[in-house]
Image (tube, rainbow, N blue to C red; front, side, top):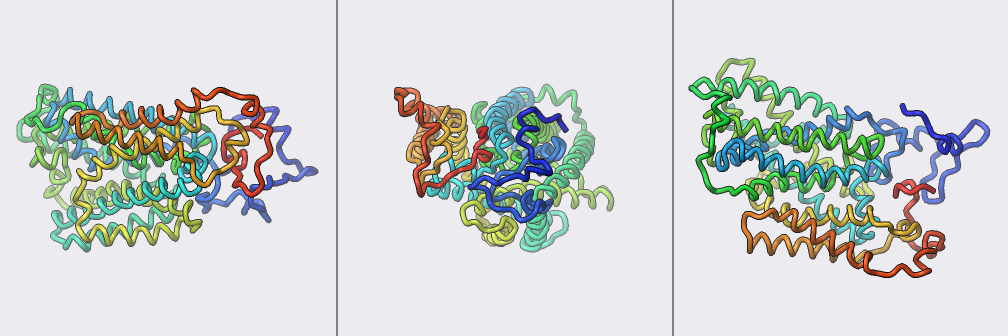
Length: 480
């Protein structure tokens, strides 16, 4: 625990001077209720300093997320088309973009304790937040459904189960983890990450038995030509455009902004690159059964080698696919709770059931369409959030929440339109970067060109209009 500053000591409650809640802060009859308790997920308010978690805990949440079979598949596809060295360069570039993008959003969350929904409230307004958060929270339910479909298909291949039964089992396990909250996500990351590394090493060893070698993999130049270099970069970015934009749901638990960025760096570039590298190596050593379509999928290498390894493979499926599914369901539940004011855990149960229905319809298999949508539409949202929180908006303007903030929505639309145009006219380009740049520019430029009048300088001391929604200072990161 870091020593408190003089300002902290001056404002800290004492035995003779009880703490007085701010007018915007909900009353708390007891300290346990005010601090939320261990079971509180703080879906409707910022995480208070006393409830923040350690760097290891938050890093486990983010680090366990991208280290999954799906990324190994994409890593194999990229390496199959670009070769190992060039393919991994594309992966690294994409991950560095994610670090800058997600890391900035994480810093904002760690500084204020706000989740994604609260961040969007001050940027897009009350009704604008409903549109933005509702859209993204629905998209991640689609990813949850995709993982359920993969679970059902995987158990069908391993044991001959009907895919519906595997999806049902996955739904029960993954929903339970999301309902348990941030602590369970952290534990899942601490278990799933080392299991992924161990079984990936075993799979690579088994994959080299037919004459391939890790040293020879470096010379692998690829056999396909379907994915250009910058398209591969776009795949990496698009894979976490959704939950990366919603990173505040995870990193609001960090002690401060710097810790939030450090936790994010565990995911991008570290864990995400490792997952892509494993899939790429599986293809490069000749261990992939169908690299042109299934990329670096290596689960098949682990089966048929005895009961122990097969049992570990089953556990691996549940923890690995479950990590992605549970994180996405948690994002969705926290997001929708901010819109509906319902409890996160109740919504996790409802959305989990809805995701199962979607999985059973087979819609989950449209992964390419999902990635295209995410890469074009989602990153401009994060660009507007970042620009808005970094621009020097005045105190009263920051605290007053409008119904709809049209400049923010217009900038999002402009960024999405620009990325769509580039996607159609310049195939293989990095659509996400175009959308981010245009959205940020459209949002920031009017404010930079507007002259600062005398009334703007006094805005910080202006009275908040009666009837306006007010955001407390602890929710914005400003000092009172």
